[in-house]
Image (cartoon, rainbow, N blue to C red; front, side, top):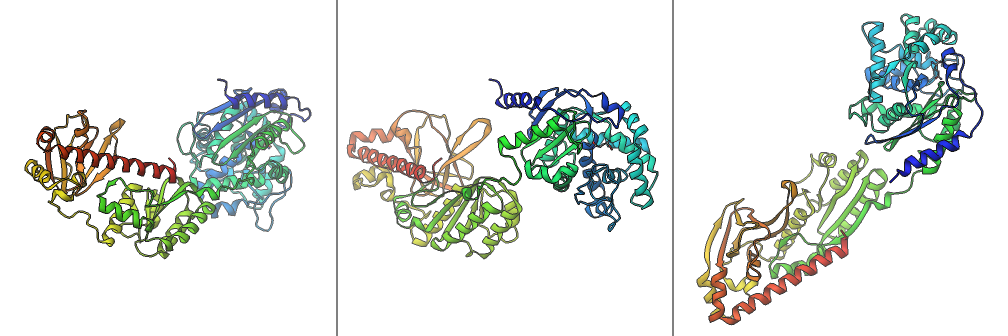
Length: 600
Ligand code: GLN
């Protein structure tokens, strides 16, 4: 199937091609050679997938689009404070090549206009001019994800005719805004402007900024994450020169244009966009490239401040232990406690990206539910991202909560770290099941029901409930004592079942083996529960592993001997089968309830 995005971009290309007007830049003579009809658009996703249409591989010089990347380098090398001494962050409202400076602070207004960019270029580190030139090329190549080259003809052309930039540099030299050899600084600046790129490259460079500084094509970091938003902010307010305000208003995403006719624009966290067409408007911005960006942003609603509300979706579902249980198999008396008192264990399932707005909803709901329950499990399994604000709020909620009441399952590392200094031992559980099991045990313990005490009497085993004294005596004669250490198998998947066990002490987990050596616990069976009883029903091999959690004392019964009992004690097997069926029915109902209250 043809990609709908590619098809969209092709349609867009045809529409934009109809737009007339503009002049190709001629003040750098080499640029005047550009074909005004050339046109290309590209989008790069954050996994590196690039959609490119038109003259997508046509090389052109990067010009001013290099400025944000060099600004990023300066921030990374010197830090914010030092860089701010050399260049401000105020929009000028003046042309890109204006000689107006911020005289109060004795610095150019911002790094997106020529003066500011020259001040930034003056900060490039390197032993020699050649080393600095190489380091500029390496920087831009890191962003593009491939080795870029200079267009030496354009470089020479601009050096020979760059009178305006020489004026700017000499004003800054005189005012001591830049130090060192001004001609050499200008040569480096002209070099950076003469690096050859295509829209593919610019889309990748933009996507690197959208991706927190990591190039999506190479996986390599091009800029330290902490400076990405500085660069984007300045692009947003100053990237389109004296059209920047209107651009923010109409298009509303950080972008940078250059006189060769290109624009690189960023939708943070989503995509990098680039468009190229040489004819420029009076601000020096490409007319068709602006139109293309405008359309993409309008068609897909990408304006930075056009955010859709998503906070209310922070809570996916709510339940209690009345409907959702751990996979721990429970005896009849334990089940009775859970059915009666289950509302005392609450469950909140969080979802999505937890940033400030979403986390506010979640902590507000936690505060509402917490007083109504003894334990509240907050399951974070479906939270795919959690930011600093969310961690801080959840940590504060935890700190203010009743001791032992608030429990997290599947918490991600940032939250674990935020809680690490204060989390009590039973606060963070690897999964919901383990958290619920802990709460159920605590609830059953407060209710006085026995959770794991040794029980020798077969009468109290649910599977045998209702059997006559005579039948029980016959059973007792068949019981053989077994003991297992932690990690030992009571039952092994795939084996033929000859025994089934009644657990007298300890607990064992039923484990399924999944593809790729992964395992999943489907149940835990404690004292009074049975293991391997399915072998009584059909002769099929064991359906799962059952492994002792700790030391387990169990009674083993031979299936063959049990079956033989039907000759002398016909009611016994009937009772056992009736109990087994009831147990299956209950488990099925529990599964239905869980699906009903939380979905999948
Ligand atoms: N090299 C060009 C100059 O300094 C870059 C300007 C631009 O792209 N707007 O004039």
